[in-house]
Length: 218
Picture 1 (tube, rainbow, N blue to C red):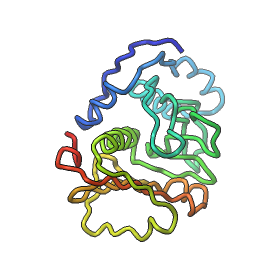
Picture 2 (picture 1 turned 120 degrees about the vertical axis):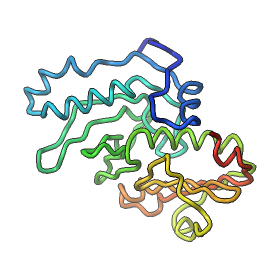
Picture 3 (picture 1 turned 90 degrees about the horizontal axis):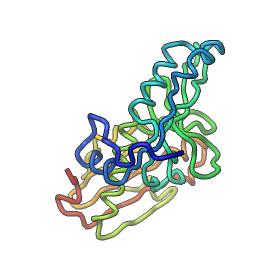
Picture 4 (picture 1 turned 30 degrees about the vertical axis):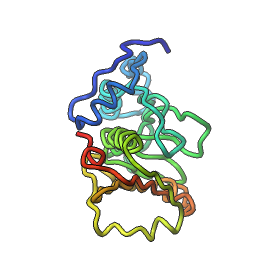
């Protein structure tokens, strides 16, 4: 793909931290227009409302390349809507962008707009794509400012004491969550453990030694 506007404007509605992340760390490449597929997709029985939903995603996020996520082998390489798939009974989903490496699952936007992975079964990670981008921005911020970063896996994650922590609302966590404490942030990645029926894949990242700026960053 060729560069379109290499310094992207952040979509409205993100936190200031996420806006900075998108504008400083992101790159906007050529964005394909999904509307050119409309007639073909309608001919394959895809409802017009689902095509419109994919087009709205493409208008907001299409062509945005962000730094790798700290889990899920980095997340989508470039956010981009693909052809919707599904049924009236099950609901319709569409791809959110190609993986960076060969994976056992893909990234999808679910029938209710959630951002998740299509593994052994559909597993929503965040309530929407904004939440996914917020989580990337928070991870990048926490990694930059933390005095220590600790990764724990499997059963050890279930033993975490989150009693003194509050959920971070802007990431809009569903299966994955972020927690803010007095001087630390904790990211809990449950998506692979749930989606692949693989409890050994459960992982948490603990960012310690944070001051007030490190805890929030805007």
